[in-house]
Amino acid sequence: MRAYVFPGQGAQFSGMGKELFDSSANAKQLFHRANEVLGFDIAAVMFEGSEEALKQTNVTQPAIFIHSTILAACLADSFKPDMVAGHSLGEFSALVANKTLSFEDGLRLVSARAAAMQKACELIPSTMAAILGLEDQVVEEICSHIDGVVVPANYNCPGQLVISGELKAVEEACAKLTAAGAKRALILQVGGAFHSPLMEPARAELASAIESTQFNAPICPIYQNVNALPVTDPTLIKANLLAQLTAPVKWTQIMMAMNDHGLSEVIEVGPGKVLQGLFKKINRELPVSSASIG
Image (tube, rainbow, N blue to C red; front, side):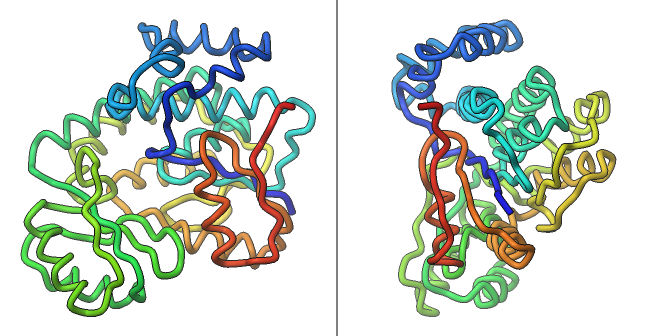
């Protein structure tokens, strides 16, 4: 069983996508289409923009989506997934790759999501932190006893969990988690508290955009972030995609579920190699690679 997986925010880099643009006529057309959909030259920012420019949420999320989905499209007949998944933002890329969403509709939703999340980030001082070297249950228990909002946000792999919430609550949680034996409790340089209740304003704003978008029957199951289960029902996919904004990304659980369901190969589609490394944490023997068009 072959899985294609798609990265989320943080995988961006200056120059991303330029090789695709230069090597494929199909890629050129899709980059031009992306510029039209967004109303600005995002290709120029991706190819020539600074690292700082690429960190802006309204640029980062569409840029990673565009890179991932165009790369998947360029794989053409060699793209033969038995299952797909995407980490946070990457779930939208996965949904285009498995034909649930069109490229244009997916990009519009990602752009709307990025704008809504940016607005939510500006309402309350908030952040995220990576906790390394503790059992998930320990992190969950300590966070549950902190005053203020701080919750598990990304279950990345065994021993690596990202927490999210109000700035002071996250800082307090980091201190207590360090005292409990965490190898590291590192505040991340992010715009706000993604995948936490603080994203509720973004969730409400995104709901109408998702509801008005056509979701088709996919060519293969997507393992969704909110429940780590294979889903093919477009109505359920929509509901899970919306819930994702305020719910944790269950990536550890997705990897384990795929592994239990006969996973034999993982191909990461998009910038970076982060997801390949995470899969190796749950199965050292698993063949993993990056997608390539030659």
